[in-house]
Amino acid sequence: MFTAFIPSAGLGTRLMPLTNNKPKALVPLNGVPMLELAIRNLVSQGAVRIFVNIHHFADMVESFLLSKNWGVPIEISDERPMLLDTGGALGALRSRVSMQYPLVVHNVDVVSQISVSDMVDSHLRSGALATLAVSRRASSRQLLFQMRDDGRYQLAGWHNVMTQQHLWATQPIASCHPFAFSGISVVDPRLLDLLPPAVKPYPIIPEYLRLAKCHEIVGYLHPADIWRDMGKYEDFIA
Image (cartoon, rainbow, N blue to C red):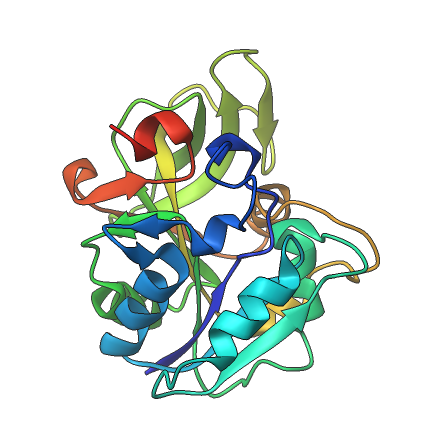
């Protein structure tokens, strides 16, 4: 069992014109809003409570969530005053997330056959602070991992392939395994206490790198062909 957070507050600019009159979370895929697909998937795999943040077309998302019986409590994190990015959104949940279960963070525009329940089990067995779903696929941004003695991948850095910018958890490392992040993480709820206050927006990847200096932030490798990012218009209509 686990709790879950579905980041759903984004402006959806990469999906325009589909998001001209609706939020990204409610853009339908085969007739079903992406937010509903994500909720149903997480509930079927063991979610006992789900948090959803709102900002862009917030009233539409809130009304949609209230219109259905999801089988588990759905709690809204209201970002109407300020869009917090994924890091800030997680920080804002600090006092609301139960310490009893791991927290799954699942981007609303990710559609995959990744077994979230298996990923949660792997996370619990490893004792890591966070487990990040990754795969070997082409991406303009790569997470860089070191192979540990126990066979797990420890987060070591981040690389922007287009600009050649690097961020490192500690220091530059010559030999790393580059993987693309898949927008699904499992985190120990203690991680939220280690994030900055949610008084302004900030992304989560730099925070994972900062925490990887002293904590286990590991990769969960999955086949690339069971995953799709539906957050871009050209991918959505392909």
